[in-house]
Image (tube, rainbow, N blue to C red; front, side, top):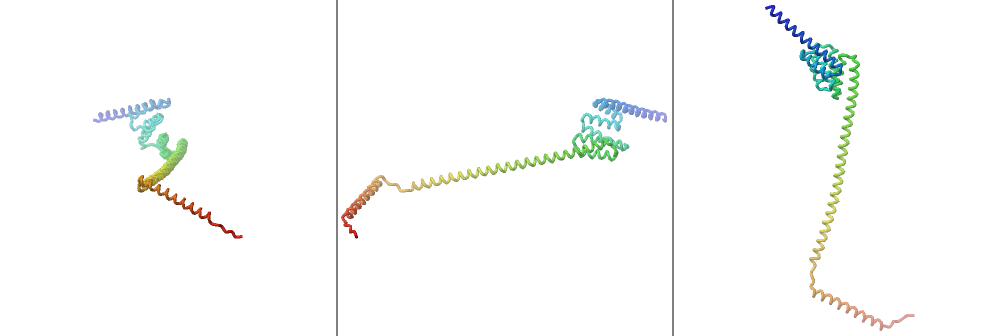
Length: 246
């Protein structure tokens, strides 16, 4: 029975050894490909290492690097966050936060990248590269905020200009409407006056042709009488002797 247990233990140890050798071998191949800038091949080899040991720190950390180099920033960040930090040294943890900050920086998530770099520096305060990356992230965040403020100001100015234009257009439209109404009222008043005049003309009594002729004859007879009287008065005036006082 002991012999069977020993054989079983030996098989387990052998399997572990084989997996460990496969992990190391794949990581070594992945590193060589990475140094040759063949990041696709390095990704393949690091994934093989993780198939042999899903908890491999080197396998996950290096895979995240290979993905980062291929500009697969989302996948790189996801792989970094999957790393189990239990049992890791402060230096290894700082490396994780440093690379996390890099991936976030590439995604223009500058505030989150700043937080990641700060976490890295808490664990490794003397890392000059992390300090430099932190200052760059802070500079880019400031620039991004200024750009957002400028965009907001431009949007506000555009909105104000549009509102002013709309108000001016409405004002002009109101002026046009008022003028149209005034013109319309004038036309209506004129029509009313014309209708009134026409109505007055229609209400005047109509004279027949015979009545008109009699009226004309009467006027002419009246004028003759006036002229005759004027002649008589003139004749009387000629017969009067004028007495002149000296």
